[in-house]
Image 1 (cartoon, rainbow, N blue to C red):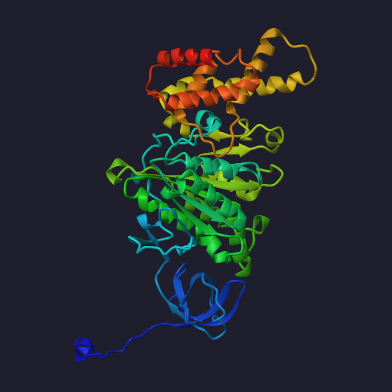
Image 2 (tube, rainbow, N blue to C red; image 1 turned 90 degrees about the vertical axis):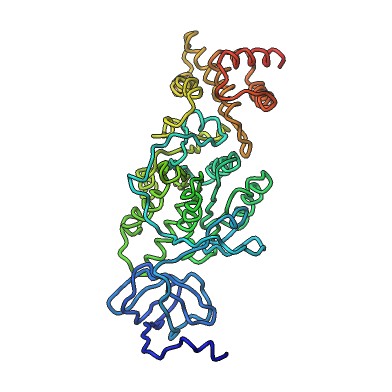
Length: 479
């Protein structure tokens, strides 16, 4: 050091608070001291690694902190120093195409470039004055969703059902189908094999380049699982605040709630219904309210949220599912009965609803989809009635046959999203009765042929219906 280094140095009394770890275990540290501590404040542990923690429970004699970087150096007597008021993570373009943990540390074996900005993981949701109406569609590439349960940019659509019924597959399909929307996929409490499969699917489809995958796997500390959805939301908000469109998938909030319950019980917070603390509703509502469409004055960006929640034996009246149903703008319900019969995706239209997505549908899609939902629901009732073995009137039998055709139209392989133009062609063909004369086993190959021909043509959603109709007649004749 030189004399220049001490030129502006002044002797003065400097006061700094510090605490001391009383006990530690299960990812929780109990701390004495820090009289000015605040809830959710970030602290560092003097363990040789500068491990971090979040103050989570304030009591008269001690403070409970969640340890984000567990290490053997954190023990009784370890010094604790206050850091930032809240936890901040790096955000920006450098994260695109990367797999990171909730603290934005790379998990894909590559170094992370210097971030463009830092943002706190917990920010207030946009106010009413900052929000615009949902008016643009966000296409999933799934026919039954885009036609019957449409999703708009800025909407919060819940994917709900028992485990293993295809909720993750629909979410991955939606990410694959995006071209001008940046996607953030948050994986909470998943096994490493499941995580690897999702990342590989996104990479093989080319969708990973425009996405960020945030991972807090099953054996990660409960603190990282707790902050994972907030970190993912902060990453996505970076683009929304810059006038761009973003999509975030929370897979899933059931495990997030379980991680929060574990932390709360370890911190001796009073348990409520199903042992969850009462503020779990506030946590999830605070998170999902950050998804919206901003006004044109703020850039017009949007953040669409697809939270996933598991049910047990189809019980949607459980605590966490009912909370999320009341927070979101609609739910897409996956049925184990439909899954068992091979009706994939196993989406039950009788229990599914989209409350705002219809306002964002293209006029051509609205015109064709208007009666299809009612026709399909009538078919489901008539099909149950026909199983009784009663003799059916010709008109009833015709409706059942049309319903079976529509069910074939809705069937779709996973990880194979359909362009919205191909879906519109399918709806026009069905409504005009062009599919009625085809055997059921030939309908799906015909739809695949539609999609291939449309990719080679100049058809769009603005193409006149008469032109669509003439082309479909010609294509079916050749098929």
